[in-house]
Image 1 (cartoon, chains in turn yellow, cyan):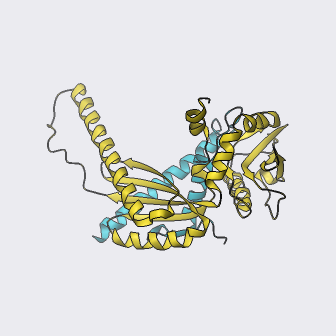
Image 2 (cartoon, rainbow over the protein chains, first blue to last red):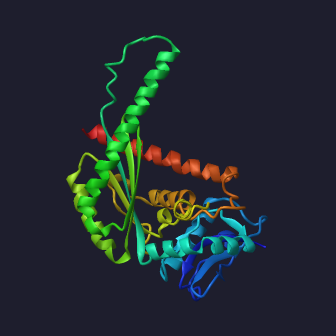
Image 3 (cartoon, rainbow over the protein chains, first blue to last red):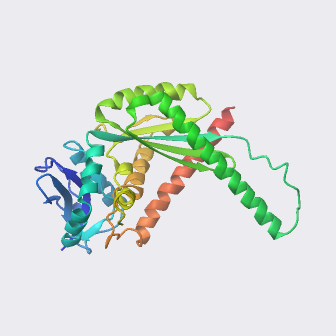
Length: 240
Length: 73
């Protein structure tokens, strides 16, 4: 039997008001020990379609359980056998428990930022300079400059957000996507659920200070961006 | 509406389409990856299509915001 997995969670005794899962399947609990469990549906390949409807159904199940406890949401499309799931939980047990403890009582907030600026200065670059080799090197140079600008922006942004949000941030992940005319940045914050209103208030004030940047703040979300344990597991335990 | 998924700051960004895109972005690109025999996802053309829609729409939305801003300056 194969299972579609929505999330791992602790402290789930029963499912209250849990919506239908993917393909309208009922959602069940698989218990691993006295406190750790997974929310799953029985997976039937014939009934399952990768669609917007099912992606949203996945999220609705995760969201519903977040009203009871803070889960580790699984990525959409996770299908395993019951044996594989039990083996995974067994071999990753300590890391899962540590991650659940880390996100307990927390929610994820996201800040997206767009900062546009003048087109990159190419006046230093020679016109009609050479053949494809030169063009390749010039492009590599631009690429390196973009990467350097992105790294610098990442540090600045983290510092600025830290200054504005202070102790509200339990964990932060920043992604920068620089181009020649715009920087797209995304900050994911893990904060305490009780701090959501304060986070919103502080971000609203911060947004007013930076009219040159366009912001979108969303949340609270289940901690999708803080759920993955593979990297931590590899680095902490030397096993992947 | 529950307290989840609300777009709380955002001028032109504030609409339900973006809330949907944000939801799909979380579900498709983030979350716990259980290594092994998973992933109906990656090889499935439909999912790639959904993912591309999210990406393209996000970039288009970003560009539209920039164009509006530049038009008012």
